Image: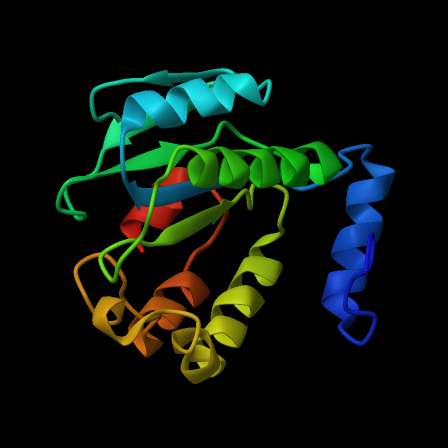
Length: 181
C-alpha cells in the first residue's frame, strides 16, 4: 500500500527513518520505456496529458522533461525517458506516460523493455553492499520479471558473485571508488 515498506527488514526501516529525518522525502527514480510506434504521436499525447516532452537525437543527458530518443536495441523503435521522478507525482507521471503510449498506438514486442533507475546517493555503503547481495541471492526471482529473450544479453546481465565482491571491496560511495572496483 501507499507509504509502506518492509517492516521486517531492519536496514530498510533504518534507511526510511534516516531519509525522513534528512527531509529528503521520497527517493528519486527514472524510467525508460522502449516502444514501437510513431514518436511524433507519442510526443503529442504526452503533451495532451500535461507532460513536457520532446523528441531528441540519442543522448544520455538527464533532463527536467520527458524525452523520446531512438533506441538501437529495438528495431524500428524508440525509448520514452523520464526526468528524475519521486513520490506520488512520479507515479502519476508514469501512469500518464503509459496512457499516452497507448493513446498514440505504441506497441511492444520481445525486443522492448522497461528500465527503472534508482537513485542510491543517500544509501550508506553498507546498505548498497546489502542491496547487491540481496539482488544476487534473488536473481532467479528477478529473472522471472524479464522475458527469456532479454536475459543474459548485452543489455541485461545478471548480478554476478564478482559484482557483489567488487561492491563489497568499495571503500566509499564515491564515483571514483565505484569505477575502480
